[in-house]
Image (tube, rainbow, N blue to C red; front, side, top):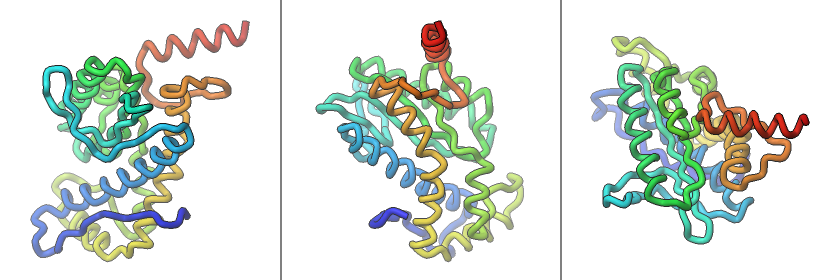
Length: 238
């Protein structure tokens, strides 16, 4: 485990929480953000790039969008990574549409942006929602729901339940509050191990332009990206 990993998840007093499911989702989401941020910052240092803290960036019309991890090279915005959690499928299309609007408007406003990506987690992301994002040429990196469930289950936290089930999220939220900082660090490290390779592939192919020995293993790629990879493979074979 990396030393000095900061855990900045603020725990609310259980007696003041009216919706344990929402509180737990928010708290776990922050752990996922910490994990992705840790990997992205390491990769930025490796490739001599800069990652800013969560930042509101204006498009050319002056509309501001909050970006989780804006990536810069010599003060020029070259990439965007957002982390998005969704529990219920009924919200998937709306949330996916908002991701598309934000990323495409910023990409149109900053010609230096080479690529944008979103790390998705939670059971709510439908296949259609992920396709909507990917076919707008925004790369989708998934933290598989089953993997996150497995990581949390190791600490007695159930992260999947029926929408009308109030008992499971209440008990899981109570257990989350009992986690020590060391346990939270271990959860973050487990998430890091799951997403590190795909994030590094994304950095190398999308921001650095190094495609040697790299096969971008994302579940959802935009059609343009698939065509380019097919052409690359064809010329390598011939």
